[in-house]
Amino acid sequence: MLSLEYIRPFSADANAFNSRLTFKLCPFYILGFTNLVTTNVTLVLVTILGNALLYALLFVLIATAVFLFRKAVVRG
Image (cartoon, rainbow, N blue to C red; front, top):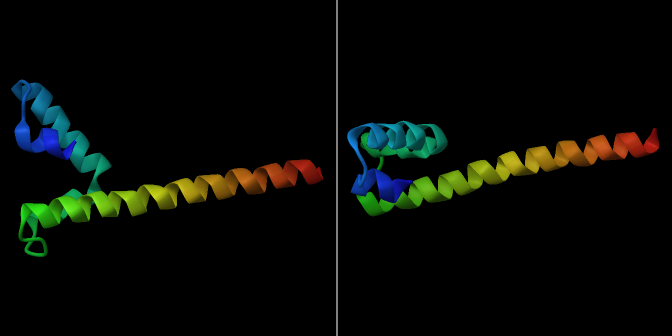
């Protein structure tokens, strides 16, 4: 999504949709508009690593909930 954000190969409507989707799915991308991240390489690294940690945490929470639910159902 980040590469599509920089390349913008589609029509204006499709590019706008991609921009909105990038900001929604990649919350760390907004750091590029602050003074905290100064280069594009750093922005891409922060975005990718931040999203990896964010979505890994979300997966762990869902997996834990499923595990506890199955454990509760088995005990009856």
